[in-house]
Image (tube, rainbow, N blue to C red):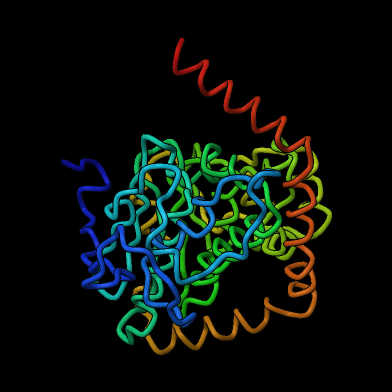
Length: 339
């Protein structure tokens, strides 16, 4: 049974989509229209985790969208219970419930996260959304190293980046403000999730770490553009090149944290203290303000950085230094498990 913050969240009960009714899973697909059927985030994530690296004996074939539903992923699917949502008093609460995995943003998790925000975007009664991770250790961490290990083709890297960026764009473009309740560290891709939100409330022990450089890759998912916009190019460049972990109080000074938990309150009190004035605003007013903010920050400079980011990710991702860093990280994790 769930416990802690997770106990207060209800699992979003949406039916599995993207399944072809009446067609056995083992049946071959000869040719179906390219118009995609509706699919869950987990189903869409199979598109780029299912293809093995190309070898000389197996030349690359053009991926076909209509085969996605029948392809088997390399790793076990993430439970649909990973993303839990509830609505209370006009506030959409979204919980990433993977505390044991540091709330890591595997591709299926990102897909479910995007689905959750898409499902509620038309709700005219919402005035606010809050995203948080389960537990106290991490708000969110980056992707699954084992899952990413198989992404060694340019097409697969581009599709992963497109899919992940689209998931975070559902937050950037959500019609009401989205607050990141940073109950713990936001690391790598988790930092990109935090910056995709409109505001951030830090627990006292929470840190923000754009540490992609440790894996010898560039930023992705639109996070580099967001960091440059929020922190400014000079601070962002320092954070990236030094792979710094920014503590809560320092984040407030840099404009990366909008509020920090006080020493004499728990995190839930700090979060509610920050949200309380926004609860008094009417939903249509919150939508108007979010539209103003989105229009102002998605300017030409932001769009230029966004346009440059995919190619930079691809070139660094496919470099031998990235694979060496990935192998070393996987070995360290295995050593800790066996210790």
